[in-house]
Image (cartoon, rainbow, N blue to C red; front, side):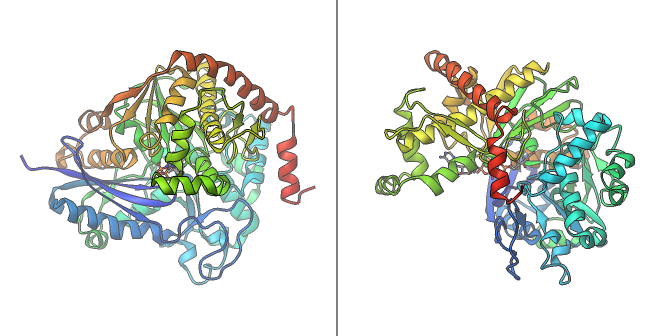
Length: 556
Ligand SMILES: Nc1ncnc2c1ncn2[C@@H]1O[C@H](COP(=O)(O)OP(=O)(O)O)[C@@H](O)[C@H]1O
Ligand SMILES: O=C(CO)[C@@H](O)[C@@H](O)COP(=O)(O)O
């Protein structure tokens, strides 16, 4: 029988990758990565050099097109697959990564008139400069007893659509007025591919407070924030919201020509990167927590019921796999935290030793830290280098390391940072359980599980649970490809459900990480210390982290 393929395009924080997959077996035939030419723009705008404010993070929309221009033709070339055999294409994206568009769907930052204004650019998920708006949204929603708030653990994040939209309105009303729509980058790329405006239920549900039955928050709520926001849902956020796996449309002639694919090839609605990974590790039923571990970690879980637990970032019906409530929690700095240490704080001698051995700084630190046993360093750290996105949901919190002495070594600190992220994950698991959301099994995917064995053993020891690892090293792109096959449907050579696609295409590795009882006992005690610090700095006993932030940003 002739082979059939799907292409998944995964848009990460620093780069995008295309993956061509055999849909009968899940075999990954070819992959290609395109680093974003402009990277993360957090200092000054390209072109004008206009300086950006504190906590800003932008991207260039043409970088997303560059991934399609380079990586898709490259996977076709490398695989030798005929475009006729590609049944569907799906994409996944970081989120909320959003931008203002004009009526033609052109990002305002690509128009001469607006290109020098920071608010016309794509705001990346980790743009944290809308915290003031987020705090006011949360106060207003709590005061009005808005039902949507409890679906987001009691707080909407500064990373999300409404806070970012309001920041644009507050700081650049002329850009807000000029924007015909505000759109997730995931939906914008689908719009480019198909010409169809089709928002997806995943980003809408998790990032724009949209609900399958109730829609967006009410006009009255938006009006209570600011009368100018009253019609936000009907104007800037308008457009159909379609369930995951829906066919947004077919590839336009122009895009098909650009990528070397067949016009009309099915294109799935967009998806969030972490959420796309769930079916790609074979998880399409409740009780299995998926840790999508990369720059950040997202924790994803399916459930038959809607429980409004404290630890969640969001719960959305059909938000991950249609037919279930999907829960999301997250830690916004994990790989990024380790990267910070390696890039900003590791002494030169470590770099020299690692270079001499040709093993890379992470590899050297992992090896040396593995020689330590739990608790030996006397250190404990809080993992909030990029704020807290779950349980506390507070972007103004910062990191901390307690127990430093003159004997502390770089590998001790590195290990303390790995452990801090594991404690943060345990805190999320326990908060879910306390809120009535059962977790029976742990699965890990993303870039980190294959890169750092010590990290995964620490996670098994700290959580006291076995951790199964995805067989695929590009789980998000694989998930996106699966949704591409579902968008095609069996009639066009794909699948009719993501559960079926997952059964055929997803696998976990034979090897898993199992807890070591002696380590579990020590980590139980260290976790008590973590919880003490977590509650002290995070629940109001000490305002010192906020005080520092106020001094840093020049507030009273
Ligand atoms: N050996 C390692 N140990 C721990 N972290 C690592 C290691 N190698 C790379 N990283 C971190 O992994 C992150 C990238 O993860 P990846 O899943 O590839 O990217 P993304 O989340 O952007 O899709 C970076 O933050 C990097 O610092
Ligand atoms: O916020 C989400 C998912 O909800 C992610 O897109 C965001 O944390 C970015 O994830 P990465 O770690 O860069 O893949």
